[in-house]
Figure 1: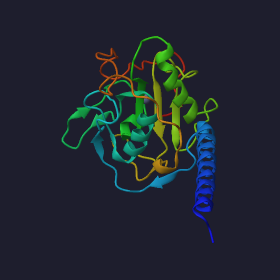
Figure 2: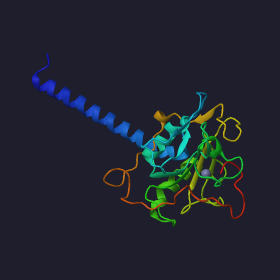
Figure 3: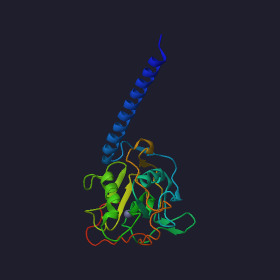
Figure 4: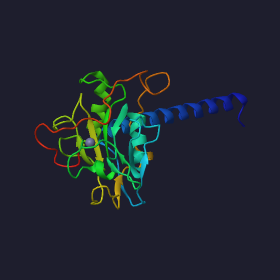
Length: 235
Ligand SMILES: [Zn+2]
C-alpha cells in the first residue's frame, strides 16, 4: 500500500516525466522551425471559386489593395511571421469597371493581373537596403532558396538578382495557378496549408501593432520600371 510519501514521490516522478516530454516537444518545435527555412512543408490546389477582395487589416497594406481571396490565408500567415507591408496586389478592373492597383507598373502577363501576386516592402520601410529589410530577405529566402527556383506554391519570387527588385526596392511573390487571361480569375491556385507551417512569429513593432507612427513608403505601388532584363514571369 502506498504511503503519502510514496504518492508524493510518484507524483514528483510523473511531473518530471511531463517536464521531460515538454522539453522534448519544445526541442522538436525548434527543429521544425529551423527546418521551415526551406519553404512550406506541403501545398494543395485550391479549386474554390476565386474573388478579388480587399486585403484584411491583419495584413499591413496600402489602402485599397486587393487580391484573390484564395491567397489571403497564406498572406495572413506570412504577415504574422515576417514584417511585411503590401504595396500592391491585384492590378486591373473590377466587375463594376473600377480600376484598382498600380496602373502600368507590371510586366505583360503579370500575375498581378489575376490577383495572385503581391509586392512587399518592410513594415518599417526605408528606401535603402538596411536592417529593416532583414525580415523581407528572410522571407525571400524562405520562398526561394536558390535563384530562379521558387519553392511551391510560389510561381515567381522577385528579389536580389532580379531587375527592379531586391533589398531596398521590393519583393515580389506570386502563387502558382491555372492559366488565366488578363483580369480573369484562375480556375485553381496552389497554396500552403497554414496550420502545418512552423516559422516562429516575429515580434510586432510599435505600440499599436501597426509599426512606426508615420512610416514613409512609396505610394501607389512600387515603381517597377524595368531597367534591364525583363523578369521572366509574373512580375
Ligand atoms: Zn510584383
